[in-house]
Length: 385
Length: 236
Image (cartoon, rainbow over the protein chains, first blue to last red):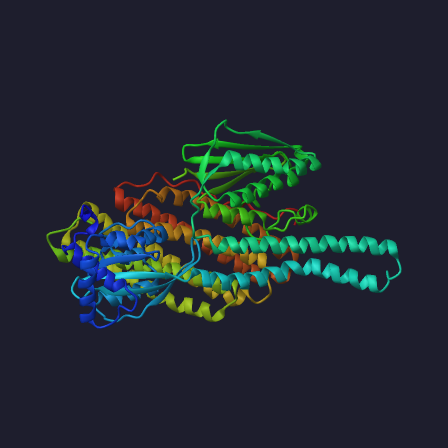
């Protein structure tokens, strides 16, 4: 029992604390008070050697315990992961500012009993939705436990559906219209023209390819948005990932007449991340550099360690990106040059995907460009934790 | 917060901080809803936002009264005094943020008159997301008294300015393409400007929070990056 330090100075005995917390957290804990009390005593005896803090920490849902004045007594690991660090003793009302949370906390701290759970949503940095309930811990501890149940997933699926329909219907219309037009021509004027038929079928194939790519990108973007609130924890060697991507793209670069030059340190550079997603990031960045910077004939990709973590730079020597477009290029379907994007089979989603993956990794993308001299995309990773 | 012999004094200071947090939550919500109303042309939501502005006005007045009362009664010093002065300043900034949100809401009907390209609204949405992140970060810093991220807030204000300038240019282009767009685009221009101003208020709050916690001011104002005053339409 060397873990008294975290008890928050409530003056309660360890076992009473634990028992009451458990009773409050137990499903269906809304029953009679005396039943709570009994359950508390029972559990206190059987779990007496575990600390309530440890127990709260293994619960996957965020839990915040506070006293009658609203001062935070404990926030479990899930709460810290979801809402950032809590200062013990600071007011819980300062942490949750949303009007509905203020109303809920106000009611509970004002002494109202049986306050109904509410839905609490956050828009930035990522969209999240919680069902929040506050219940007193036991009968006389003066503590309250606030529990959060994550409903973000359900909401994201809803939004994904709405977004998908909106984006897809808009972006798929153009290729679809083209295909419809060619079908009409093939049935009518070009019915017996074998040469025209061949050509039109070729264009139709191209258009269906574009539609397929678009759907793939939209789906992968939506999937990323769905899990954007989980931070990846694997350790990944950036040098290996970026090197591997450069290898796979050598062929494409060769076709475009671009040489990929590498500038890597001789040792692995580790960051926290998810391998497949990072591969997607660098494939997108390198492919863009090769395609849109084709006129520069070369692309330099470098990995370096910095004081804050690690940077990966992809630099091309093409026409560059106009200054006014730079702040916007990660927006969905934002294209600097629509014709060039179409010609390179771009979907307008590549950099949105990059941005989403990097957000999830706590990494940042900065873009520098001088018109006529090329552009460099720098990904800043925080140090591996 | 250090405690005082008089518990009532502590209570009064805590009241101010809680009230600021409430105002912050309201202001964030108003901006969020105003932008959502604009993007989805939702008049009903816009009306709610306009009605809700009253809450912030009342809160600001209440904080002012309370702050003056505390100063008169307790003659606060050092951190307490900064806390109170800071509350007055932040509540003024938040009240302005609410006004800007309300102003966006008021333009919803006019901006939705003619069908605008979705791309424009996405630009405004992205701009609003940046401003809301700023606001959230400074209000979180106020709540936790952690000032390590304050400097980043000021840096990111440049990002907002750059995006605003880019939107400005794009709106001008749309207006040139078709004069029928002028009404809606002018309203959108004001909306974008309002969002950019919200970012500025967040920066002000960041400076105030820094002052409350450390007692010293952040280094002088960085140079302004909003370059829309230099944007002209070429060949027009």
